[in-house]
Image (cartoon, rainbow, N blue to C red; front, side):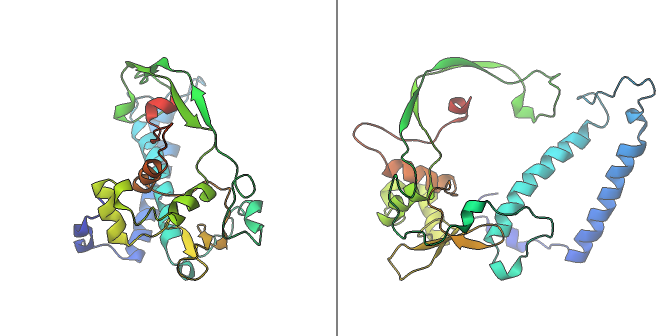
Length: 257
């Protein structure tokens, strides 16, 4: 589903009460399977190995799928107006650094956020993929085997911080089409984005003063925290940051390996 897929608004969704009832039924079914399915009977005390040939392998797909939705839901909660969400009773406290007050409106490198030097990484041959008998769940594109040569490259010492990204915003990065791919520019216009979604303007127009929205509260902008942006925004930042010495681009999965 693409960001501009408007057909999703034509769907007929169940009521909240219906969703709650369905969740209860699914939960009861899964618990019953875990507690009573004969394939989990460890009558010899040797442990039960759940692999791709086991009838309950699908349970592990469900566990992994739920983790994906938990991550997605956290973003949706964060995009929801603050007055429509509440912090769950057992939610862990936010990081103590969020309590820092009197954060400057114009961050200074080395003071409000750390310098981010480029570190040389030696290239190497890497093996991708995992065997079918790997002892954890995997999606279909994780299996198989492939050897790839990754050439030398440079990587930033730290993740990109709010302070670094502020320079891109203040320099008009969201107004300059040359930094954006075509689809990214269309997305920016569609959402009328002028800065990252989770930044909240806290000063006069054009002052580039911001607070930061977390999942359940708004805190003073923490310039040394990693910035939360999507692929289009990160790509545009890299194009803006190009210098005579370096061409910046997002790390690939091969670089991470």
